[in-house]
Length: 246
Image (cartoon, rainbow, N blue to C red):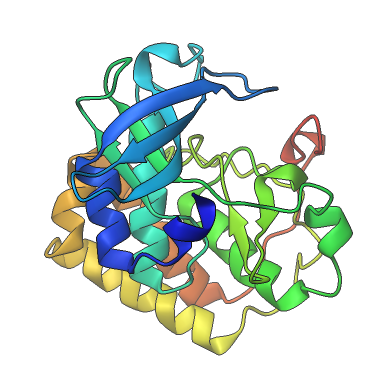
């Protein structure tokens, strides 16, 4: 089934996740929220695996509004796609999930022996883009195990629910680049993103259904800051590191 899913075009995969029948196969282990491995089936017989996170299965948090993490997962995908960096797997929001509304993300068949700490420094260029992405979306939970290596050698960043808070929340294991200059092409993409957010057209209309106006304005400010200051931040305290690290 995984191989068949890989043969789908991007648009076919999007339609399948958006419209297909979701059948949970079971809870995924070691997750703080209810997270299901699901089979998604289309009317034409196409099938794929996905990660389904229903809003009602989210653990309440003090600093993020209840029931919003799945929408933040989708928002992270939209920003990743708009930047053209392909950090986040295809993710959609389904109001008709079997356990209620929630996010549905393409399942990455990954080598679970690999994670951030094992892939560095050989894949440093990939992680420089992921680090810049996490600064822009204000990722409060980038653990090493959230970095997945697929069979084609691409590294994906998953578990992006703790993002887009309007206050500084960056908490990550990717601090190796602190103080370094951000590559010019990444800065240009960040500048373009800021402009698109302020224009509020196209894909930004979809983003507005997922996160609040103040969160979008803060997102635009962070993107502009990345473009203008041009350096990766450095950790300010022990709070800047997630736990567990993997």
